[in-house]
Length: 143
Image (cartoon, rainbow, N blue to C red):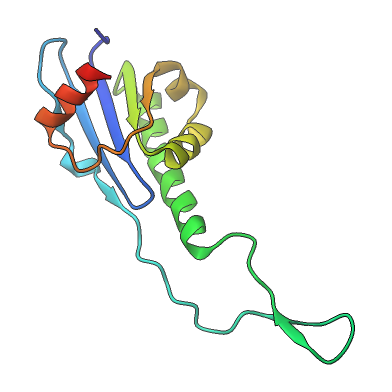
C-alpha cells in the first residue's frame, strides 16, 4: 500500500487527468481543477523554406527537425510535468503513479524534478486516460 496522499496522473500527448487518494483506505477522486488539454495544432501560415539543389536549378522544401504534432506533444507533456513538479515541491503528495502510453511516459519522466522522481512509486506504460475512477482502481490493483 502506498503512503497517502497519493496522486495518480493519467496522460497522453493531448490530455491529462489527475486523481488523488487522501487517506490509505479512501477511494480515488478526480481533481477536475487540474485537468489539462493540449492546445489545438496551428496550421502553417506560410510555406516551408526552400533550398537550392547542389547541382542544377532544382529547389527543395526544408523539413523541420520535429513535426508540429511531436513538438506540441513535448510542450504539453512538459506542462504536465511542471504541474506535478510544483505539487511535489509543495508537498501535495507522498506517492506518485504515472499512467501513459510508452513514449509520453518517457517524456514525462524526463521532465520530472528530483523530488517528484523520488516520490514516483509506479510508472505504467498503458493508456488509462478515459477510465473512470472505479475502473482505474481495479486496473491499478491488477498491475
